[in-house]
Length: 510
Ligand code: XMP
Image 1 (tube, rainbow, N blue to C red):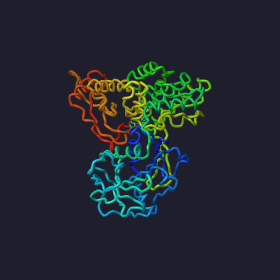
Image 2: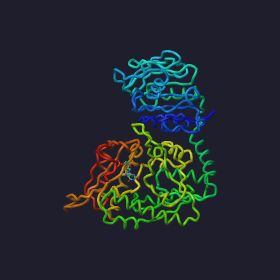
Image 3: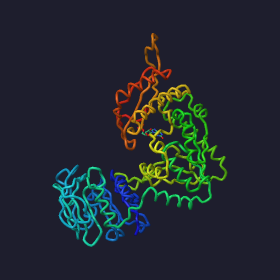
Image 4: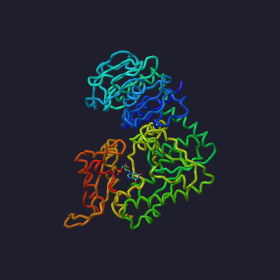
């Protein structure tokens, strides 16, 4: 029995969610574009067809050849997937008369005993479609309806083919996970054996085989992904992993020393390189955000390359790339234009250095990286760290950068972040930081008038940084933090709190 699940993506906004739900069941799955069926279909124990913004009736309908799958493997069509299985197998799909978005309640009809086991009549499901299945395909058993959707679920007699018009992967389908579990475990017989421990065990074995006695160079950033990637590689190849942690002078206060110590405590073979002066020199006089990013990227590559060359016979570059960065996305028109994003902090390195790339986390989502890290004993502090941009404080100092501005912002940021930790707010916030604004404003301190810097504090909640909202921090906390900043950080006389959401604002100010 194969224990991998194949998810064929027809361009739905929810495809990644399907994968996450399946993984939450401790079942491994991979997403592939609908038009790129893998050659090794035998490796998969079940197949799921995603939804799609397209219509099966349109000229641009997406219809891959499923003849090696349908009737031969357990198959579940979701939304477009269900319509696809109807339309091309003797059923009829048409535009629906009523809007079918949002919640609905399921009524069972027949033949869904196993598929809907443990799910109650009337359970809430989430719909999002404008076409509907008017007539079921040949051999269909009508399993369930909702008030507006007659053919909400069916299966094909004599096959392990199932189809549902609603989305089991979204949170608002109350029993969605149970339904996926019934399909994958009860019907397809897939084992729920894909745990963080199992991932570590198989990945370490694979890394040993892939890398052998070669040396690997890896750039640590202090963040979760590169740290977990390093620990995995370290487990596999020990001291043949050479980590480089570069201080670009734009890290948080004391970050370089404390993170370096932490890495050394974890037994990693890590070299800390303090290149602050080189970065600050390269940034002198530059106030355009993109030029700052480019300068930092360029110096990083130079520094990293200098260091990597000192490691004789290094053959591989280790990277902490994760799954959302490598999933090939299906464009809304269904065209084959697949895009693969590059890892934005170290993009360009592999070509430049002619090293082979090893990416032990490339099949994991962010929350899975954290769980794998926890299973290897990484500290909750490291795993729970807020994201921090590669260019660091450079994009939080608006305008040009000087050592003095970096110092001021480091002090302000440290008071804010330590305060969040003391008030037990740090883990309730997705990302937080301070911005140094390019304005001076008037203040009074004692009997003196001052004309000093203004800083903005920002704390947001988010799941992936794509959208975000500001966090309603307690007034008492803001009051105390503002006082402490103005009293302790020389050069700052005004603190503001950013209450903009993304969109239309962004998280960073540059
Ligand atoms: P924005 O400002 O675009 O930020 O809303 C979204 C997320 O991306 C981070 N960010 C960056 N990360 N290099 C990075 O490595 C960058 O140039 C960069 N710009 C923004 C930001 O911190 C947030 O988590």
